[in-house]
Structures are given as structure tokens and as C-alpha cells.
Image 1 (cartoon, helix red, strand yellow):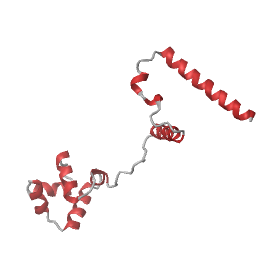
Image 2 (cartoon, one colour):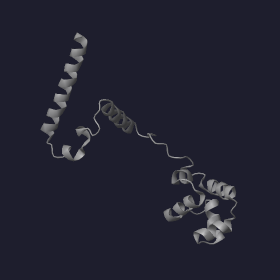
Image 3 (spheres, one colour):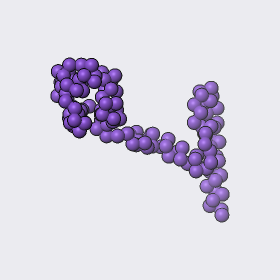
Image 4 (tube, helix red, strand yellow):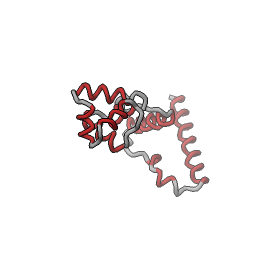
Length: 133
């Protein structure tokens, strides 16, 4: 939560509130709220939610200093899954069977290998078909 206290102070000043004003809104003493701005104390999640409501900002902004960006991917595997979903969507498949996890859990290792081999065969067929045209 680096910079959390500075964001609180900046927002408080932007709204023209004193530390006492915000403390009263939260039901705390001015001393407690001041310790949040000084970063000598961390507020509980419920308090952070109240602060976000008071300042009309997202929790992401309050905690991280940046707004959440839909499509922002931190993990390379997440990016692969997102790309796969886009490919399915381009082909008109809205709910790909392959992503229905509850159905995969009942398959044996042998059955999963069979599906994998079938997929490899279909890709091979598709490549050969394209090369011959």
C-alpha cells in the first residue's frame, strides 16, 4: 500500500475536509485517521471501503494508486487463456466445451490423452488441407 497515506491526504485536501471531518465520518478520533495518513497504522478493510465511498474512488485507486484496467493481465498464462477465448469468440463459440472444468474432472488420464491426440490429428489435417490448396 505504498503511498496510501499520501493518497488519503491528497483526497482529503481535494474535498476540503479536515482530518477531524473525516474522522467523524468514520467514527474515529482525529488521531486514528491521522495515523492512516502518516502510514503508522493500517485501516481495516471496512474502513478502507468507507474511505473509498467518502472520496468517491475505487478500492484499487485507494490501495494501489491506479484504477483497475479491464484486460490487464499480470500472469502470462492468463494472457494465453484470454487469447484462446478470443479465438473461440472469433469462430462463434461462446461457451467452449473445453473450458467447462466440471466435465474434465470426470475424465480419466487415458480419456484426456485420447482427446489430446484427436486434437493433434485435427490440427494436422487442417494444416495438410491448407498446404494442398
